[in-house]
Image (cartoon, rainbow, N blue to C red; front, top):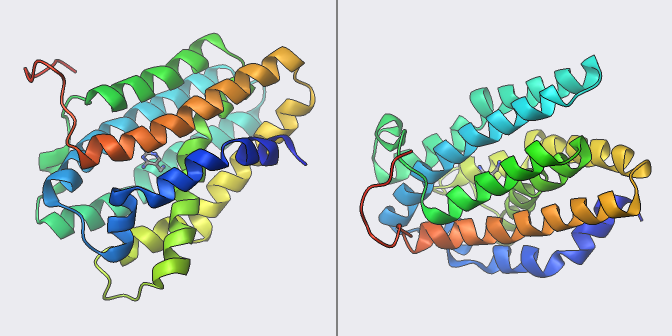
Length: 228
Ligand SMILES: Cc1ncc(CN)c(N)n1
């Protein structure tokens, strides 16, 4: 079993909880409360901005052009392609995308991006990938699960979102990241592998928490607007 297969197996409990989450199930059924969706897009736009900055940190840790090229392409994927699922959600709630950009992150999303930043700043490239991998992997599996369970057609309100993550483009993002991490893990020490596993599990937890954050429209306790 490869290192990332092992990670997937150890964290299957969280993957199953994600598939069952009411926000995710709502995408499959074609009905999610507008406020939850708006909360999700606001947080996810800024989350993906932070994700690209972490790719930037990963570039600074890269030792060859192949790695630099890889992270550069993944950044492009977020900029050019991953806006489509956001547009799908915006169309559903009838709010312009621009109105949902530039908002401060709610606590859970804030925690998630800082968790990834921490591993990127203090850990190796492999540890950084361990913290990043649940992002593409959980969504790719959500897309696959929803396609299998709901067999959406073009008239489904979230057809674009589901097919985007269930289709080959998103599958490749996960496969390529797994391949890189598996290669790096081959020369990682047991303690480094431990750090990668911990970073991976916490990111899985935070993926689940992100859906809950959006579904419950989580705010900072004081309700006062926080600075970005
Ligand atoms: C929080 C989160 N996790 C994952 C993805 C899919 N890249 C996303 N857009 N947002």
